[in-house]
Length: 402
Length: 81
Image (cartoon, rainbow over all chains, first blue to last red; front, side, top):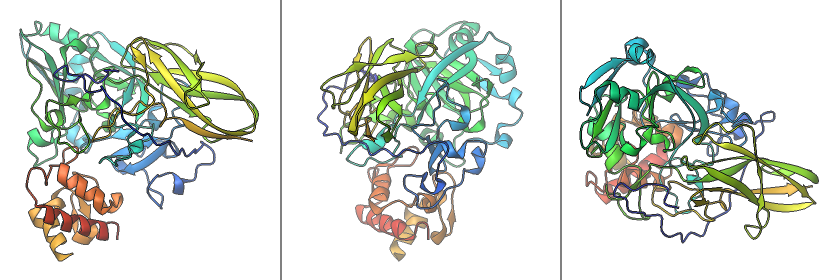
């Protein structure tokens, strides 16, 4: 389970001493949603923030203006998550239309290549397309289960979505610039959304990913067939399939092929995975590749006796999925679920289903995905910031069958 | 409380990034504290270690533990009021 690559290749995911709490799952269906209860923490309804008025409020849990997740049963059954239902996690405020200006004129500077070049969005859009269906997931998805109460949004399962990005291949662009310079080990993307008056080194969203992602990365201007909305990083976003959300730089205006990781705060000490109580250093593992994970999306609380169909999603960092199994006895026995619908490629999630015949009673139902490198662990990997949770026990559901 | 307000507006300069009606601050770089209504423990943790682009006021010795105690007490008491 060495799924988050460490920048120094050291695996930190070596032990798991958690006593995991079981999730208290709240189910809110599309039809009987009670807005007043739609937020986990707020006693009063929260309106959809102005900058994302176009979102589907009933699909969302609004933690704060910039941290909004999708209800567990609102990712839909079409594999691709409707963009109106997709979560928002913004470290800094999204750029608005005025700040972005004329979209075709948006500029991207490419460095660390033989011929450093600046492209406009209009120029990029004339290049060959690369289209990638993929899971976008916040590093902290599942943070609510961590018992030590880490800082940050207490995400359940909803800071994750499966979307289709369209744009141009990073490799194509680099080759157009005469190819990489010798010694390029990282791809560093920088967002233009650094708040005014803040030192970019402290406040810019700049992240580096290993050069091994070179062939998979793209610079995208469309998501699910429409121009990327400002809130999701339009007009141009660096997309790193298989990697946590933070590496997919919104409002990207600079791309550098470098021999070193960025020393900006967002790379050097943020999004690091380290022991509870310690301080983050650049030697701790960073939130790069996602680990194998799954969760049930329906039913979440109750079902009628007889045949009960469980549905959910499963994904990895691109390592081929082998299957998903369900357990009704906290992991003593596992039964294979079936994938349903098309396989949209190694970076997309698969939907799974399992038909059970259930008598009256209370059940704890867990799902466990397995890829070619291993299975989800039972427990979460304890870490100070509450990142990268893929333990199946916390993500199980408690169902009353009557 | 007065000390907490002073740290919020001066020593810590929390007001430059966060909205907090009682402190008359309208910063919009970080989340609105009136909206978030954090507990004292949550404020303490965020101020000490930093989060996202927020600096680590404690670890980087911008504020003393006593100052963090005061400002986090203050924020919990007035946020959302």
